Image 1 (cartoon, rainbow, N blue to C red):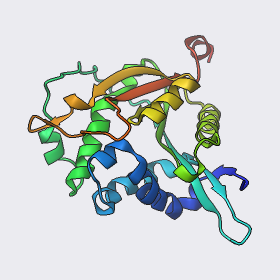
Image 2 (cartoon, one colour):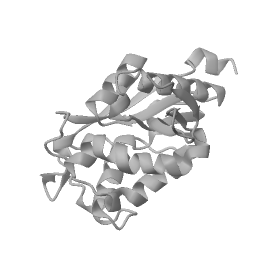
Image 3 (cartoon, rainbow, N blue to C red):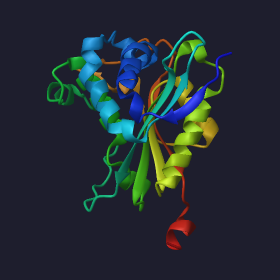
Length: 236
């Protein structure tokens, strides 16, 4: 078995983008349900990479006959400081149609705007949702190459990322989990669900956008984890 090393992702910026396009895209249930092409998600994944590469952790290995590292897993993270403005959270509307959000999204590719709208609907104003916190550590993407699954790589990437969040002085961690495997991973690590959006309720022109997900998933989840409890915050 090849030795797995865990390192900062910043020096692997281009490799991370290629991993998102060629590994994550074909393993993530919601992109598979859209039959999303590389062109569909290139700009969206580039933004994900750019936003999360500075605080990312990656798993790499190197074969005996190679001089270059191979990425086998990534965890993209970013830090969201508290802003002065706080907006009340919107109550979930199961009858909402998201056509306008898709039509007016920031990307020219419709599938990219669908993904962006779904994540935005789940995240909402996460600072308001999580209460009085100064810095939120977001886990944006965690993914392991299928060829290296069941080796504990995802758990180790998450463990190291949570420690990085502590080192940065963050109060809470949040993540949007759409695959059943990632939801299980976060629950096992101690995350709890604070918002749920059933795929059947995420509609465009009254038709669900994500259908027949290959893992049988039924909902996307906004999940959170506490790095500092309220007593620790009061002592600062």
